[in-house]
Length: 58
Image (cartoon, rainbow, N blue to C red; front, side, top):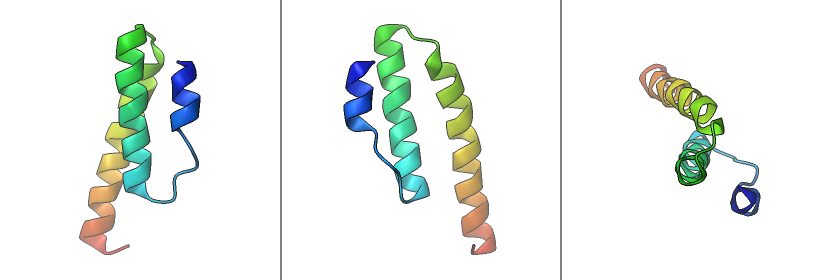
């Protein structure tokens, strides 16, 4: 998971957040870390928020 710290930076857009969550999920699968459960849930919420933003033009 140390590689994760090198890859993750402050996200400026929702798409960047989703990309970073995908990285966390992928690395957690490789290392069999349970942090991926939180990242998966947070990713689902973030994707839904992006869809709502597009629908309501936020």
